[in-house]
Image 1: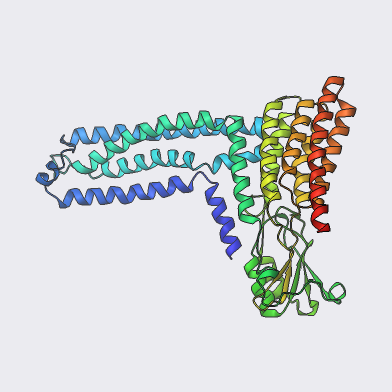
Image 2: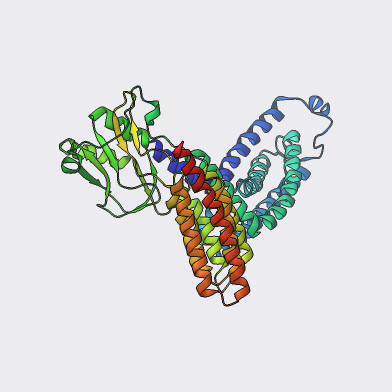
Length: 453
């Protein structure tokens, strides 16, 4: 249930209707409250405020009608401008970035401001009574409508500036990078239950039971789609309640086909139709990947921008270099964090869950492979990738991670040797390659000294 709620909350955050609808509801409450206050207080009390509408019913009706008509027209214009910006970003930077534009709170608030002002003026307008009826002019409510109109003009000016800035490539790359950094801070280290260090009597090694491979039963997906979220708490509670050991065969970001194994359950004879339904309820599938629990998706967003920038139709190596800088920064942060152990325990120290976790090498492959493959003949991009590897080398803490970086450096320089026609450019790439390998060699030496001591 928790994972499902998170999925729907993510959908609400990425929608254009939720914030404007909420602001429209607030406008309804404000309109009824302001009109009720107008009916309750006297004109003398309103005059003491120093600001209020003092015209008649005809003037109030005309003013509110003008404001309401203007606001709904501007709302349509704002929506059109947003769609144009999204279309431009989709064609230049990639369609998967549309989610970032739709999640932009500023765009949602701007659209909501105009819609809310329109709704407010419309509701107040219907309460005005002329002299031939029982005369009533909600002076305070009309004054609030005028203030909302002035506020909306300021919001419109801000929106024009915001749209102009938000479609710039460097700004888009920076926002995706910020989301990536937030994901790294949230997920590493991550806990599905308690880690070994939190258990009362941790063992030296965690091992699956000898009969696990023989007696465990696979539980498959009941539908097709991308795995977006895993309700870890529900899995741990079920494993504790039924005395089960679960081994996850997938992680958020993987595409699952109906019937594909998601989790191995031991003992297998305890798997019933009810258990299959409970296990599937803990895995939330969707039509697209999300960054909530899928750190590779955020890396791939930057990779997609870089690859599209390197395509012959766009040919923008500067944007690709900006993406490489951000990827290097994210990998530096990731290298300084502990990867979570795949073994998860309950409060009594009993092994309950074996997760399919991330590795630094796997994430580095995601960050570098596609860019390297598309930049073989571009020495500037190859040089910046080698610079990024040299920078990351100062943050990695294991020889295994250094070996992964050395492998990428070797592939980059081999590609440049084969595809870069100019000898001087190849010499520049070779020089950066030597700098990167020297930085990695220092790490190997430090690791060896630590092991010897």
